[in-house]
Image (cartoon, rainbow, N blue to C red):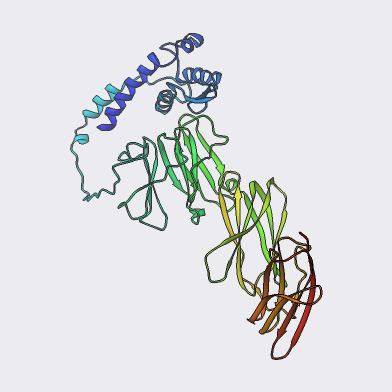
Length: 450
């Protein structure tokens, strides 16, 4: 019964729109009248919007994006009638909503309310909203996490997306980046559950949310149209996102195109106490570049250690490498954080850990930089546990400063020297390492210039 009342309202609404909201100039220019078909009106209005550079209900006025009066009303009128007119001629139906309602009332079964089911509905909320989004209690659409029954997303006809992770006890507004417009549908991408990728259809096209990132437009190539329904076709050769629209039919895009990089390989090579990372991409779309992250095995505190710029767009294999130098003995994990120009990202973890072993000999490097002021660094390596002393001497052999004096395990080490208490000139630094099997003395020269 509510549906038929709505049908009556829409019928009256349709007449009102044709009589009052189609600009007089459009009616005169296209000679529209009571005999005009749906296709006549649709063509005239599309030309009208295009002539004024109206895009998804907005146009630029004095450099400001401004909402166009009447556009949304027309889109709803168009959607309503497109499904009811003659699909070949565009003629409007001969019957009326009132006649159809009388026919409906004539069947007593429509009013018996017979129901053999037993329901026990429970309100999951939420019925209040903040932050400029109204009407959270009015739900247009809902989506569920495929493996977590407590995670639910809902969209409001007054604008906004909310999420619960505890079955409806608490709801969080996750609408940042999304225009304050009706949300028509939500779909969850089951192929990318790690990042929790969501797509929504709105009055102004499709938007995507990648994990914790803000919503971003995903409408490139779509016409100026309301998206009423979204579905994902999962396929080995590339998942397809399909959009049903108000008056513009069905549209499709390959979701893979939103993931900028197809990685062919990601490998590592140990050279002394350095690790060389190598990776190859098969193709790249909108690829800004790669962050390189590292963490000691057994820990989760990832540290960004470098960045390599991507190729942007490329259909050819691309090879990349990055060297992580001067590592201490131990085991490490590496990952790539691939980032596109929209701020979306995806992690690629290196298979297995990388082991930096102990050195095969005693050594002490030339300080770097050299000459220097005010600071410089020295690397040294110990193949076995040793008692280590590193002493700084002036040019005539007088001891100036003790830099290291302690027991140290086999491994790689780095120290820093500050010259604030030293004058310009030539200095020598000497490594003495005593172990059960060896007594080693190594000396180098450095220069301070102030």
